[in-house]
Length: 477
Image 1 (cartoon, rainbow, N blue to C red):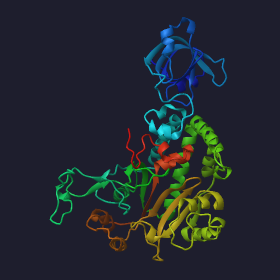
Image 2 (cartoon, rainbow, N blue to C red):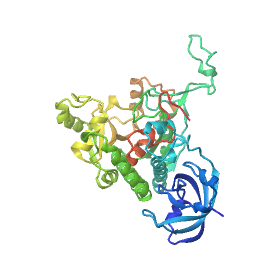
Image 3 (cartoon, helix red, strand yellow):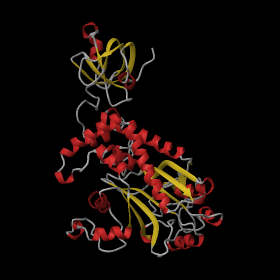
Image 4 (cartoon, rainbow, N blue to C red):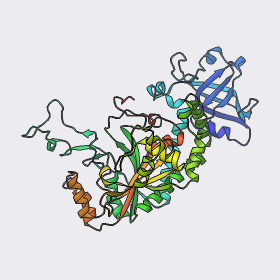
């Protein structure tokens, strides 16, 4: 008989004479009550075993982590906390789990321990919830853009360009390390490599995305990106997913409107679809907060924080105005910031971004018109010659979540900026072509998907919102 998902059984509108459920044992108590979970929901279904008529050998094999199949009657539950339970008439062990060795015992485990067991951590309530939320968020991303007529573009993972100009890239090569071919001046001869040139894993699909926007009007990319940044923090990964829309004929204001609307849509979509998981994650966060000093605790519970983003228009503030606010702020004057703001031109840190959102404006903030010298070469230069049409969206608890800009559409200005930064024109000849042939105002932004998942789930470490994190000195699993 075909098995029914636990979620569907728990949501049933009536009792059923015979059902079959398959899943993994979370707990087994009193030789009678199995808590069964199949990953379809945060909630377990209770399966009641007739232990007097079940062989002793079978009962011994019902251990945490074991895969089982149960058949029986779906009846109204006598126990509190659930509507239905299964009165088991037939039980089959599909896969044994050695109770002594199975790491995911029904007790509280540290997040570090769970990272060391990333292949099994998804069997816990917290990680099951996080991954279901992640999945729904990813679906929401596609739903939003598809409903608005955007074209989904798959930009290359192997690329010869460094979109950010930061140089923190993973090299891709098929050359032998023990006998690398060299040029006459001793440099690596990439002409003998697989692609005939130096290539890397992409840090962004933006440049390629722009070329498609200049033909298809509005496009988005959603794929893996890579940064060889030796940053061992709770906010950085070496491999992560990026959402990058690019829209022809959009200026910076249109870009800010799109980003705000997009973020509010995907958060609302996920809140509607993942109520049980988010409620569980909110409870988990409340427990975690209790162990922190009062000053470090979040002022808002998880669902309150998500509603905060939905219910508040994002405050739009120029970089210059933000610097004035920060310079005059109490933590700056009392030297409480780790990075003191003294003058215009400073690159804002997470502590400054969070101050603006959480303490000063008390709503999400979009900062725009940044100094040109702290932003990428492709951002449109303003008439003042010192700022660019860039924008960052700042969120409570997390700081920057989106970075974007109106792109520099003027060929001569773009070439001058590339020369000043030492970026090879020949390397990006194809990118410059979009400014030679039918150039127009266009804009886009990048949103690190894991940062979004981090915000929506209330987790504090980015390694806990991606199935298998890739970080410095760690490529396990």
